[in-house]
Image (cartoon, helix red, strand yellow):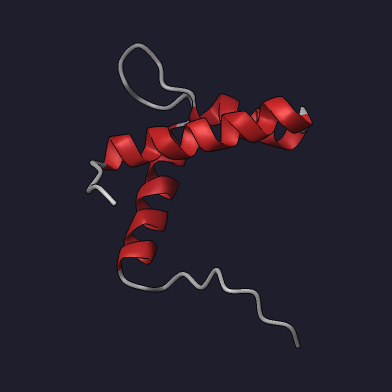
Length: 72
């Protein structure tokens, strides 16, 4: 897979979530996307979202994310 810039990865995630919103019309997902929307200055509508995103990227880069299904 290609190396993405932080912003490109953000936009990929946004597109992925937007597609699922279009299929489900989930209010929660719609609210999240609204907060994630980029304004004309390039910042997110909710400034905390960008920092949450950066923290998630760091966790993924350092292997702190476990997305494996584990049945107990």
